[in-house]
Image 1 (cartoon, rainbow, N blue to C red):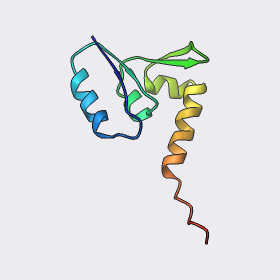
Image 2 (cartoon, rainbow, N blue to C red):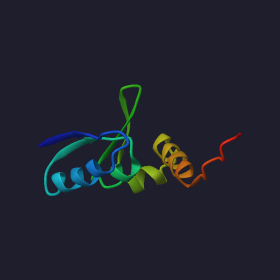
Image 3 (cartoon, rainbow, N blue to C red):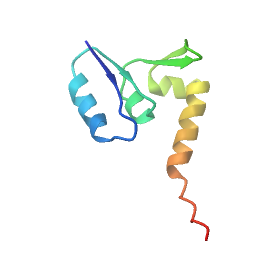
Image 4 (tube, rainbow, N blue to C red):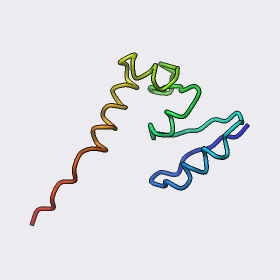
Length: 86
């Protein structure tokens, strides 16, 4: 079993984590939906308690807190950067 925590802002570890966990049991702590979507099982925490569990697709369809966070994350990724003032 491997327990991995992502490095915030780093993309190379994202690919390495996927390779390391392939075919193994692992726990990945992440805030990236791109990584969470690859998991067989996702646990959604709210104030330290598990409030939902399931696969990415099922959690998005459930319209709960996971779906809201995922929608906000997706909207932010497609938002154009504001032009600097001055």
